[in-house]
Length: 393
Image 1 (cartoon, one colour):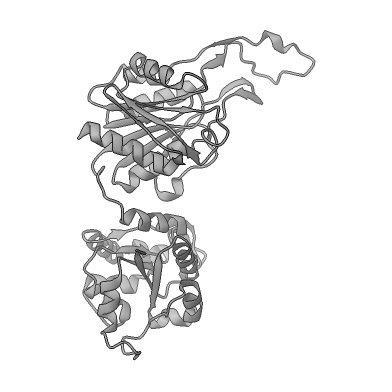
Image 2 (cartoon, rainbow, N blue to C red; image 1 turned 180 degrees about the horizontal axis):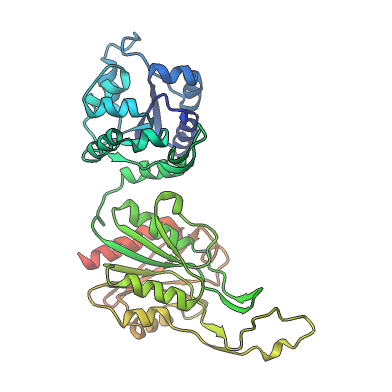
């Protein structure tokens, strides 16, 4: 059954961005209803929101329709999630003090669930002590997203920008996920490392970082405090509020993971560190006319094995991307590197693995094994987190 999202729209200048949010929610399969303040209808015609949501837009408490139910009570009861975006300073103050003088504020009082609130306003209005006090009051009962920093519509620079629609959408998606990792600190090593040959060439690998990104996103949705130490990736999920620490080489990744390891409960390592580095790296670009045969390679630091030496109570998960004897190599790696779990997959298959949105893996521990079907990497991320929870709880 479709989840019903009620989107409250107040008269902030960022109102046009709410159209993108409504469109994104509809495309994702949600049932979307929109309510607007009277002033909001002066900025954007409700017909546009009706077209985007494919539902009637409400703005007047006293508007009559064919339904005999009390409008604000019905809308409040039917909403699985109530999002107000943008939320002006004026409506925010009304919510804090229980004022119900329009349809949105009436629904707020009738809605019994936690709301998602998206403040957006001028930086001086946002930083005003009264507004900050109101935000703190709302955080005690609701989810309040922090606005972005940047150039505002009035020309000022500061905090107050409407967050990206992707960030708000992710918060809504997360709203419906069980928070079974709440309180857990998860450290993730992700992406490929890079080792220079000269200032313009390097050694690396085909890792896209997709698996690590999905693990980070799923763990955050499930309530974990997530930190990602990230090498070379095709994209990342910073826009969803996940903390990324950028690194380049194996040594960089090792140092950053080691620095953050003590405070972590779980380390998950889908990263693809380079096994070798150039012994005689050049400080200048090697020319075509020069002899490349004299490039010497040496073993690089084994990041996961070295980090595992510092393990206390942490649960450590490794990955084995192999092309043959996948299971055997994975079990050997798990034992040699003192891992609690290893996730093995065959990267020789063209329809999954590196760069693909799909994979099929074996999740192996010392006392059991789970073999998945071909799934999306997001689905596999949840399978891995489920397996971890089963072991640590």
